[in-house]
Image 1 (tube, rainbow, N blue to C red):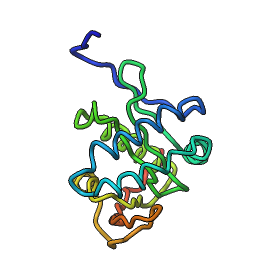
Image 2 (image 1 turned 180 degrees about the vertical axis):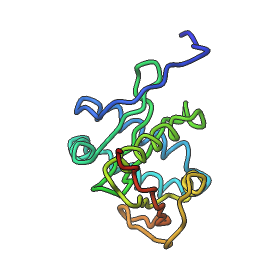
Image 3 (image 1 turned 30 degrees about the vertical axis):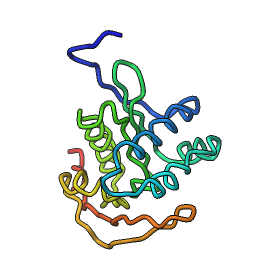
Length: 168
C-alpha cells in the first residue's frame, strides 16, 4: 500500500452500487467515532439501520445523496431529505478530521442555496453537534429517539441560508 502526499478529493452523486460500501462507512463511523457519547448497545442499535442493505440503498436513492471520494474511492456521504433536512452525514474513521465532512456539507449547502432553500436542519448526534455549530447551525430542541430497544439523544439544529443572488 502506498500513501499519497496530496490525495485527490472529489464528489459525485450516489449510485445504487455504492450502497454496500456506504453501509460499511455508516457502521464504521458509528462504531469508531461515537463511543464517547453513546454506549455500545446504543451504537449497535443505531448501526443496525444498515443491516437491510436494500432498505438502506432505497433510503439513499430517495434522497439527494452525495458521495465523497479520496483518490477515486468512496470515503463518506451526505443525504438531504426533502429540500432542507440533512438526514445523514458520515465519514469513514480512517479519514475523519481530514475535511471530507466539510467538503460534503459545503457542497450540500451550495446545492440547497441554489435551489432556493431558506434553511437547513439536522438531527445531530451528540458527536456531530460541534461540527454543525462550526458551520453556523443553532440548537433548537433536544430529542430522544428509539432505535431498536435503545434510546439515543440528539439535537435538532437549524441554519438559515443566505438567499441566492439573482442574475442581472
